[in-house]
Length: 223
Image: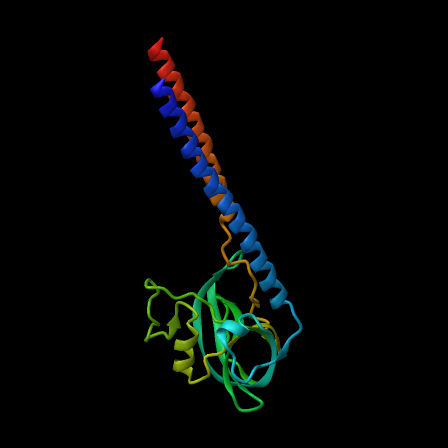
């Protein structure tokens, strides 16, 4: 009887913990979906003028329209795009009509195509963005080729002597036909909570199965 009680208590407690973790992940999934919906609403809102002092916490994803002149200064960030392959993100300097210097992510250039840094008047519709792409494994920019391996807004701003502000373009007028626009969206924001929930519930099911097997073994030995 002691063995039966121990097996049942072990099975119930273990299953309860695993099911609780699964339920917590379901709740986290709902929370994350709410955040993603809020971000999508913000991204697709009507564009406004560029704020005087953009703030990452307040203005991340803010839709804006800016006008000015591309200075001909820029850099390339190594990237890839599904169904196209390797290429570069072109980050160029825009001097706005009120004299500010900001960064503009004009879009993706396939590796087999060529394009120069933008030069001349332009009107950009896009979203303010401070990508979180840099970690301890990100290589430093290549000093020989000038190639970057992540969009590090503060570092790029320091290199190009601009404000630490970047607009990811949805549309640039005039457009460069060689470029593919990669506007800001939520596709790269992870939401793996459903996978985690399924994992915990599956482990709970396995735990229950092992408990039943243990009880069967105890009963067999007793017999």
